[in-house]
Image (tube, rainbow, N blue to C red):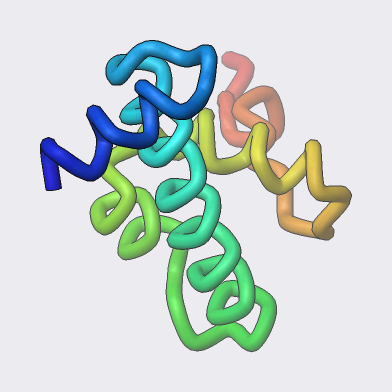
Length: 83
């Protein structure tokens, strides 16, 4: 695997580290898309997805906003009890 990355780095004008970062982004996005499909079908919850992807719920909701996917927003103000 390392030799393949080095070969690819030699052929392109990118460093091996840049190639690894691009691969990481690609496979992360692939996992996100698979989980979003399950989320839309209501087969997987936010808690499970964030645990699988090792990201915070806030980051997951940002991804949903970016991809314009409807979700329920948690509003803390409504839950506070005013004495």
